[in-house]
Each structure stands twice: as structure tokens, then as C-alpha cells.
Amino acid sequence: MPAVEVHQFAQCITCHAWSPDRTMVALCPNNTEVHIYKFTVDKWERVHVLFKHDQIISGIDWSLSSNKIVTASHDRNSYVWNHEGSEWVPTLVILRLNRAALCVQWSPKENKFAVGSGAKTVCICYYEPENNWWVSKLIRKRHDSSVTSVAWHPNNILLATTSTDGKCRVFSTFIKGIDMKDSGTSSSRDLKFGEQIVQLDLSSSWSFGVKWSPSGNTLAYAGHNSTVYFVEDIHNSPLAQNVAYRNLPLRDILFVSERMVVGVGFDCNPMVFTKDATGLWSFAKFLEERKSAQSNSKYGSQFSEAFGKLYGQSKHGVNDGVDSLRPRGIAHENTITCIVPLRKEGEKIVRRFSSSGLDGKIVIWELDDNAEIPE
Amino acid sequence: MAASAAAAAAEVEENIEAMILRIEHKSKKIENLLKQSKPVEALKTALEGSPTNTKDQRCKSANWIVVHRAMMAIRDVDGMFSSLDPEYYDILMKYLYRGLATGDRPTCDQCLRIHEKLTEKAGLGCILRSLADTVNSV
Image 1 (cartoon, rainbow over the protein chains, first blue to last red):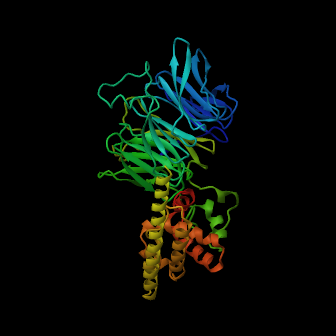
Image 2: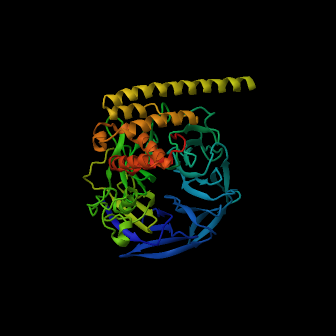
Image 3: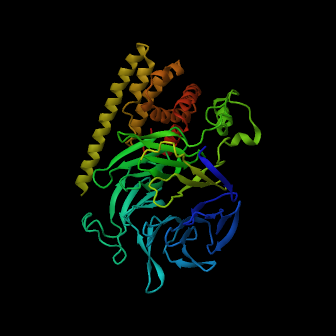
């Protein structure tokens, strides 16, 4: 059974992130605060509450080596929180946005972070020690609509973004003085800050949840049209694959290994996609076996009543009252919006990861040791 | 500048005329197939090459008429799915919604009949794809 722990933290969680040693989790319970919980002995204790934002916090990321938390909120601001003594001290980052910040991610070297916003821009922020503040550089061009998610390539320079204009783009975020020019890689023309390297126009609907594979050779993102897009060999000769699946759309995905992706979304049950030996991606299975409480309906009990009305028949099963709206037998009870890896030191494959959603739960999943995880 | 814009517009017109001719040609083929009692083949022919990547409403209406003709001729819906390839599911779903939008009783009845089976076969993802895709519409 892949779901090892289920924890109810709030009525609804917008996003979460884990501390470097994985004993603490920072989450936003759908309000203007960040709650940090620590697992002590046998229960979760709320150890900190970070108050600063005026509106809902849409993104949290916790850096692994420098132990800094960055938060982004609908109030158009971002704060970097430093742990000093027993307190978390915020530093305002002036993003220069006139719309909400929607997502945030630390770069692999943790010297930069990227914020996607509803202002059709991406802010790349870096630290200037002389003035002791974080400076934001904007990528203003290219996006036609809100930037829903951002993902850093392992080389700390390339950034992939997805947007509600349906496209996925890769930009260079090279900043003089912060990044070192790699002598082996692409021409210096490509390295200019804000330069668009690739634009993928594969989806005709909103796109979410872009991620790079561990090596950085494959890019994947989810479309709102119940399709996942995989782009192989993106640096040399990009080859795209559209994997359309039967179920409701995904909101976020995670690369467990080079050949396995887990996606989470409106079906409340994580979906596993794998790449076979010929390089073809396909839907493998749901992570959790649904206990068949739906002998009478084929689409999940949440829809049987609606379909009954549509087809004008009573054969779609009895209305179970309140429970007819919930899929039964699986960990999450509502849409999963966020999936985060719980990586162990030196491990190439992500065996453990957590998901949070609109039901206010954080579920920790662990893939069995003997389950074949294609590398 | 204006000359090249006019030339581009003329080229697009020509493609639309070519498309409409193609649809007329399809229509004849479909009538033949229906006479031979091959409604599923007729539907496949109608769905193939649907004008989703143009904004021209005449083309879309012309193709809809042809798809509608084939769709209404189907009597055995379960049988249809045993010979319809999955590649046609998404485009069929889009036409089902166009049919449902007409409000015409016999059309809607048939569309609902097919919709039920198609959703069983293709899942909710198929419905999502027809709703979320506002660019390639029928």
C-alpha cells in the first residue's frame, strides 16, 4: 500500500514544503499564514506561524542546504525567511509585480529563486550581499497569460515555465556575477538573461506542473485537457509525446526517476506514467487501488448522480446521501494540488514523496523497495 | 504590405474552397456507404479530416451536416464501438456536444445514447479534451 502516512492539517492546503531533515513541514492552510509543524514522538506539533503576507500564499519552497524558506503570495510579494535562533525572520523581496505571485521555486544551487505570476511575467531573484537584499529581474516578454508553474534545470540557468496560454517555455536566467559561464555548453547568445530557448505549443488548454527529469534531458508538463506532454532530448532534437488519458486533469507532476512520473490532480488518486524500452511514455496505473465501492457506477460515485440526470435513467445507482459526492477508499478526498519529493541524501530515485490538496491533508507515499521502478 | 496581406487572404480563401469541395466529396462517399448498410464506415469517413484548424464557419457547418447524417444512421451503438478505433473518440465527442447544442429532439436523443457509451469507453478525459480545447473546435 503506497500511502504510508495520512495527516489532516487543515480544512484546505494550498501548498507545502519540507525542511532539509524532513522532520518539519511548512504549509499554507488556505489563508495568509505559513504554519510549520514538527513531528515530535508521535504527533504533529505546530512550532511556528509565519505572519507577513496580506493574502493567500500560493507557493512555498524550503531550500535544502541553506535552510531558507521562500514564500509567494497573491499580495504580489515574496518573502525570504531566515532561521535566526528560534525565530523565522522575514526579508521582503520587491518583485515589482502588479498581479498575484502564483508559484515559487529555489534554484538547484539555491542562489536564485523564480516566481511565476498572474502579470504574465517571471521574476528571477538573487541576493546582493553589498546591500543585503534580494533583487528581482523580470522576464517580461513572451508569456500571453498567467505563469502557473516554474521548474529549474539542474544546470541552475535554464528555467521552464507553464502558462494558462497553453504553452511551455524554456528561458535562460543567466545573471552576470551570480552564474558562471560553462565553457562546454551552448553559444553565448543563448545565455543572455530572459532569452527564450524553446517554446512548446503542444496544448490548446491551460498548462500546469512543469518538471525536468533528474538528468535534465526530458521535460514534462500537464495540460488541463487531460493530457501529459513529454519532451525528450530537449537540447538537441526535441521529440514531443502527448499522452492523453481517461481521467480528470492533473495539476502537478513529479519525476520519480528518468523513466517514471507521478501526476496528481482532480482524480484525488496519483497517476503513474512510465517510459518503456522504446522510449514511449504511457499511463501505467493509479498509485492506490480503488476499493470497488462503485459496483453500480463506472465513473466513480461522485458523478453517478449527475450522469443519471443526463441520461434520464435511474439505473446509475442509488444516491448515498453525502458520500455520493466523494470517491471512496483512497487517501485524498479532494483535488490534490501539490506533489513534493522527500529525497534521501545521495538517492537518485525518489522513493518517498508527499502530496497535499484541497481536503487539507498531506499524504506521504512510499514506493516499495521491490516494486520495479524503471530507472 | 497591403498586397501581401491580400494575397495571404486569397490563399486562405482558396484552401477553404478546397476544403468545402472535399467535404462534398465525402458526402457522396457517405451516402454510398449508408446504402451499403455500413454506418460505422460512414461515420469514420465523416470524422476523418474534420476542419478543426480553421475558423471558417461554413466549413465547420458543412462537415457537421455530414457527420450528423452518418451519426443519425447508427442503430447499434454498442456494435459501433467494437469497430471504431480509439483515435476517433476525441473528435466524436466534440461533435456530440455540437449535436447536443442544437436542441433538436431526435439529434439529442441519439447524441446522448452515443455519449453514454463513449464516456464508458473513453473516460472523463475525453469529455475534458472536448471542453478544454477552444482552439480546435468543430
